[in-house]
Image 1 (spheres, rainbow, N blue to C red):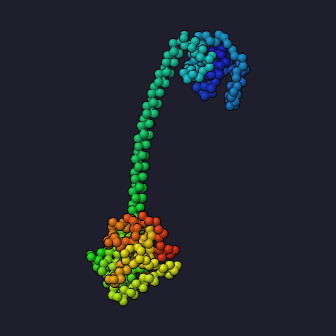
Image 2 (image 1 turned 30 degrees about the vertical axis):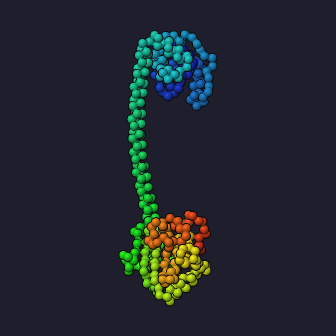
Image 3 (image 1 turned 90 degrees about the vertical axis):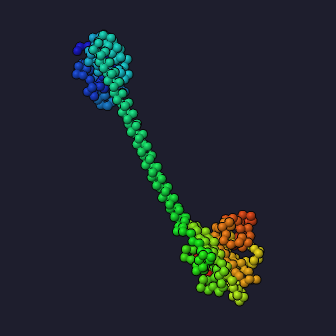
Length: 341
């Protein structure tokens, strides 16, 4: 192999030769060229040391572009030629050689056919991969939705449990359960008021003529409606009235308020604001005292006549017509369960 090739053709072949991707004949062509070309030899040595950016000196041009170029060199250049990675001189060499060599033209067509097959296989693999990823995505989405549904279900159950607690509604009506008529302030009571106005169950001096106890809700909030109507003789009535007027908060000294403005009957109240209403109505003519506690009760759910409600009592138990400052003898103290001692 005595032919000389343009330096740029040798430079196109050098990286392939260093990776052992050229034929033995092409290696010999490169070796012969490096023996006589100082510039290409210098670039080759720099490439071996990892130094880039070198350029060839004065390039040789001449008869080496003839049609007698060895097929091995062209065949080694063809993969670069198909990827448009060859220099101008290498491209001229390949085009000139292909014009006169059927064997290299066939080799070029074979490379093109192989690349088409490879491209089809890669496209098919990409489609299969995409389908697999798509299927996996839907599977993960289903798992995520399932987990989210479980979390929401558990959260909903927890909210229901904390809101409703032991949500069994407790309702005692004297017309149905007379023996439970005095069961106000029971162990399940968690209202805002201490029920200090209500008489002690073991010290009740009057006769219960009507009673209604309704509790519903849970750990976070409860609604209460307690109605107790007692009839007294004259002396017992006066004693109970005096007890009511003296009820106060032992910690803060706050006392109940007596008023005749809340309804038609004189009223003593310990709590009269949004969170709850604890008050008594004094029917002196009939020696009857009505004890009432309401917490979050809609006026449409009352178990007693509406005229026993405080003025401006809203549908849900708050003042919606007239704004007024609430009052409670329990302000500043912890809420306790039960009634007065």
